Image (cartoon, rainbow, N blue to C red; front, side, top):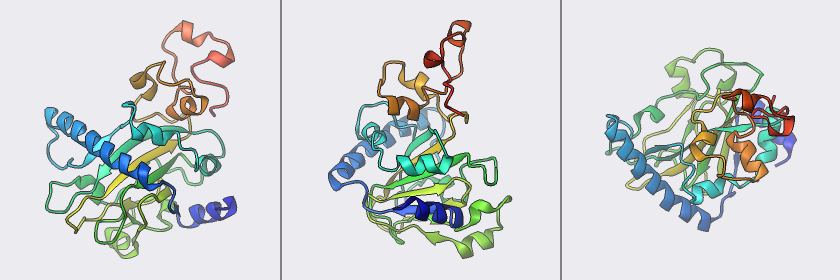
Length: 259
């Protein structure tokens, strides 16, 4: 897609769909590994008393050396994301979601209209969402609902407006949706007997605080790949000692090119 077309669509509608980006063999690995992450997070949720309304959701799914880690190395959309922010960006959150049939104890929050950045900043872009369709997204299995143009609204539109103007982001497995995080959106009920899996990522400008401190979670030796260190936030950390503060530019915790 030409950058000019991407810019026009993201400014007008708030979202852009890239079709057939992830090949089927990779999708098969993602389905297997998403199920493992969801099961592991489910155990933690229950231990911490969060058993209700969280079924099918896994948060911060990085660091296990599986296909979800490998997906972060895919850079097909890097140019579009950099264009959205007009410069460097980092990973703010990385989740996986299995939108289960409506008879199950589904992840209820995702089915209410919401937006994923809490501070409305107008034309100054703080956050971008990425949704990876690991299964086909259809009307019946709860394809994500989007309200075109609602990323320009300062206040939450009323519920009737959201319901009346929502469209569903249908697409084949392997397609990827990018949308402005100010866009009002929700999951929809899965009225089939099968699962509907997705990866959900958010990206921000480097100065924006990550939902999880990925460098501290993963450790200094997790990767030496320059792009991955930028993406995971290693170049935008807060020093915790004078020794970390007094460093030459190339070794500083917060690098000069991070905005």
